[in-house]
Image (cartoon, rainbow over the protein chains, first blue to last red):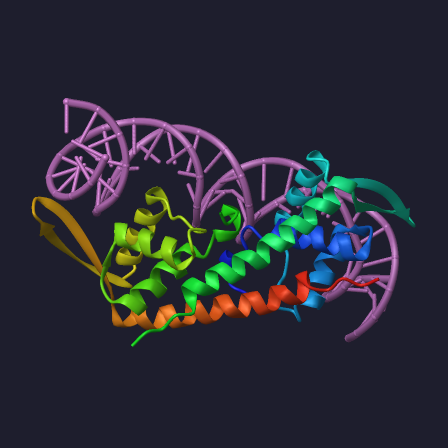
Length: 110
Length: 110
DNA sequence: TATTATATATAAGTTTATTATATATATTTT
DNA sequence: AAAATATATATAATAAACTTATATATAATA
């Protein structure tokens, strides 16, 4: 498992990127996909995921559609246009961040 | 500048690694070194740095010595033995985290 | 003399995530 | 058939981490 304090600040980016790659998804599906892609090392909790999804919706980055699978409700999330371009920025920013932090964390002088 | 929410959770690791590479350092020096190594992209604020240093000290990862440069006080921080081995772990953990998150953030299917 | 750089530190407030809890249906195992 | 597990969303209380604001003081430079 990934030390969870490192994950802080990346949760939103993860969610956005998954929606960008997979089209519409629902909450439970997102957690399963993250687990799969990270070979079990990242597990999103619902207590963290839903507030993020609701915030993204409030900020206009995603929209929702509710569907019924039998009697069970399922809420699909889809990126808006602004959400899509914002996702690109956030992902680029993450890799910039890694490059920059590597300058700091790689050196090991004599 | 690096988006600061991404930096969350890495601050401690940055401080530890700098101390591991440079021997004893004082707070102000640490902020300057981070700025230098990151080519100006990461700027630690004191409000974030000092609580981290105090916590590391309380946890036994670093020790302090106070010196006077003229009339001005300067507080040097040095890694303890446990602090040193913990630093290695934290840095490794960071790069593991990057590898894992890359699995999630890199894919872009049709 | 005024400004900037050096130097440490705390407190209030905000954001973000964790843990606990609530609710309910569908499927699989015993 | 009953029990357990998986599917599915959501909120509330709490805790952790960081930001912003503030306080204090000396040294060097313009």
